[in-house]
Amino acid sequence: MSGLLALLDDVAGIAKVAAASVDDVATQAFKAGSKAAGAVIDDAAVTPKYVSGFDASREIPIVGKIALGSIRNKLLILLPLGLILANFAPWAITPLLMIGGSYLCFEGAEKVWHGLFPGEHIVHDPKMHENKDPAKLEQQKVSGAIKTDFILSAEIMTIALAAIPESNIWTEAAVLAMVAIGITVAVYGSVALIVKADDLGLAMATRGRLGLTQALGRWIVKAMPVFMRILTTVGTAAMLWVGGNIVIHGLYELGWPPLYDFIHHMADEAAHAVSDGFAPVAKWVVTAFMDGVFGLLWGLVLIPVATWIVGPAIAAVTGNKAEAEAH
Image (cartoon, rainbow, N blue to C red; front, side):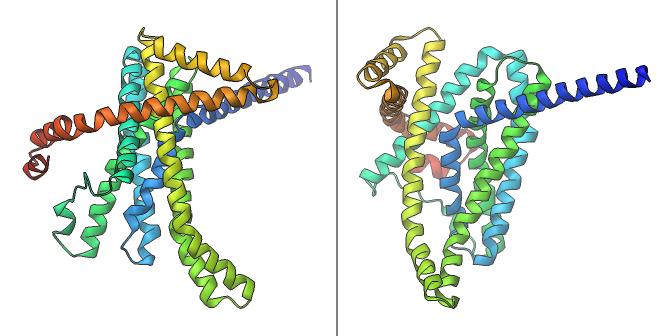
């Protein structure tokens, strides 16, 4: 009897350890995923454009295909690459993060530039109009969305990897897998709701039996364009903030601390200028604002570099002469 009790005690102990490990992985996954907020919000803001112009019945299937491609990107390609980097070339993580952060800054600054000068830097892809076959056009759109997702997913996974405390390869793999699945479900679940919200509102406005239902439906239809603009603005701000923070922190890690120290000094000054209850908020606001300003400035510097150097170089390597001539 005592042996059975000892065995049950051991099983209970193992179960507690396993539960603690699962809880630790979930906690790390949440913290790591939250670090990638800029790329996540941008992913949710960018994806709805890929279903525009298609029949309403194809919207959810298209989102589903993109989500499946996103999962493959993260689990089959980026997760193994991330583990290899973390365990065999950890020195490469900071430079790669800075490249990803710079890309976020570039994307955010380009959106700001387009907002200020909407007639400039508009690139039309002639391939998108080569055929009118809806099935081929859908396949082309999905393929383009998955390629864009790969870049954003690479940023998300790299940021998440850098946020994981030092641990063994299995814990890192579990955390990254949880981040990959959780973020994909959150992003594309949100996208599915967004792209169908106007259809729901229209149905409520035209088929609703109650005046309140019809009024709510009309409000949803009118509110969705405003919501999308707000989402795009928040996504752009988040990209600049997160991208700027990554680059500044990377410079600090590589041995150039002046900018990092200056921002933290200003944040501390702001915290001391308010009451203790608001000090953390003031510190975060100042840090995020200054990271965002740096991200915008750095992104504006990168626009001509990408337009006149990187773009033509990629076009030359891939053999896309039309794109090279466009630049």
